[in-house]
Image (tube, rainbow, N blue to C red; front, side):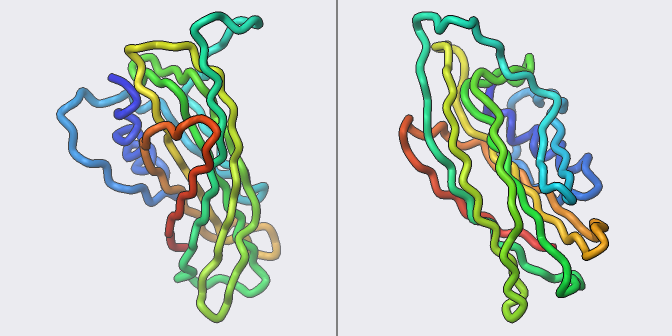
Length: 194
């Protein structure tokens, strides 16, 4: 099974994380992917990390048959503030890209894992917070006709009070989507609730 299985993995990860509210995966007739992918969010420091997948090592010299893939993903995450959030709280947010060529049966990604984080801008009148992140990437892919190419996107947000206590957090998972053409900028928008 290849990259399309990430959607099933994403749903399993969301179900395993007590703080996550994951998107439902579409039903599939394919064999289920291994559930080794795990996302964790350090809300205090705004860091979203992935584990359970290995980024494929490349030789020090670039072999023939490789392709350089570059681009930028701009994300806007709108966070509806439904919980009681103090006016002195901050709303850290983060996003992660996992992309390139992937084989979920191993699990190895020939590409990379990229992250970005920041604090969302809170609008108390509309009870929303907006997180804007930009993630540039450059991956060298070894041509593999049997591998699927794609991009998996995860994002997180939290309510952190003035004493640095995380009151609530969420991790959302989306994808896979087609790997954008090299040199392009992709704009994505998500909505979630805290």
